Image (cartoon, rainbow, N blue to C red; front, side, top):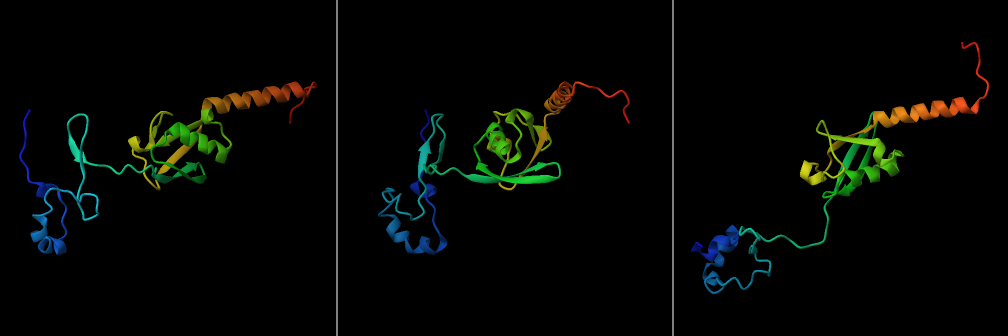
Length: 162
């Protein structure tokens, strides 16, 4: 194990106006006891892999992004969490478009995305565009079912079609 010597001043943010004024007081507060008082101190944490990183805010706020979903000639602006999956986006879109989630195909940057892919991992950001297509296989099945239902409803078939 290697120990690195460092000065605590390396891990401290300082503004240009307070660096000269606080130079005499920095020697008295060099132990880092005022880390949470909002004076620009950075809090550090060691991750399980041993990497030293800046501590994240532990707020429960989820970043909400707006995604524009284009469906041919129309579009829908959908607000959703940045860490949601494409499957969850399909569920939200099913309320707006009337298509079931299994009937939808979502394309982002020219590639169809799986339901388990997370939006932030693929690179979807605020105001990005996602293309929604109806699954052609299911569309064909619906059309065949509608034609079969129409044929069953009328017992008489016309001989002459115009």
